[in-house]
Length: 226
Image 1 (cartoon, rainbow, N blue to C red):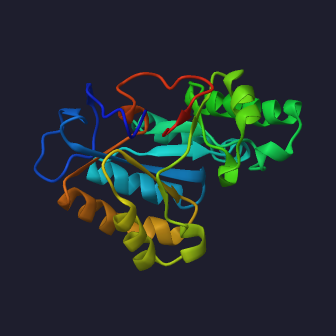
Image 2: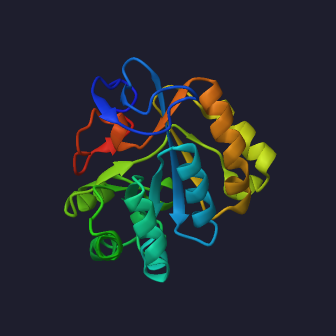
Image 3: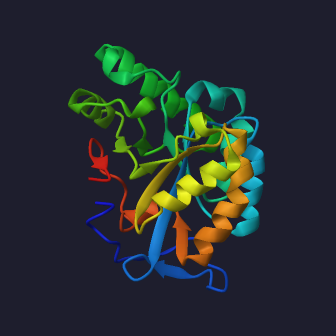
């Protein structure tokens, strides 16, 4: 699991602190942190991708299916540049409120949209609003999806202030943490240069969620972190 199972495998990731080699990083020996972004792709996503590329940082994007259909090139770029891609449903509903077939349709349509845009279907999903239960997990397993939650959320959609968002990330940062943000919030994108700079200064290696899983594919129907 993400928190108890501190990662003993060496894997190729970006996002090493300043001066560190872009080489195989053993997260059992160094501080790793996953920055995750929900609700895209959006208008501000390209600017975030520019920053991540410039800083050689990898992140995880949980994409909304209907937005992928609107901006497939952005989803394709994120995947091509080495970021991890997850499913965030097609229309962003509260999944536990839906009938089984509707949950399956929300996840399935997004799998198809992402695969069409990027060439590969995700192995992870994140439930909108964090609303989930055992039934949702079971249904997600039918699409070979593992659930990814978070260890800390910035509530950036409410803060909408770059300074406050940066402070929230730095407060929530911890080894093997998974931090929730939104690439559709302009203030978050504005805050990211300072966030990345300070996290690197503190010795964090910024990696994707799969990089926190010992290099193994997330298990369908399982939820991370435990």
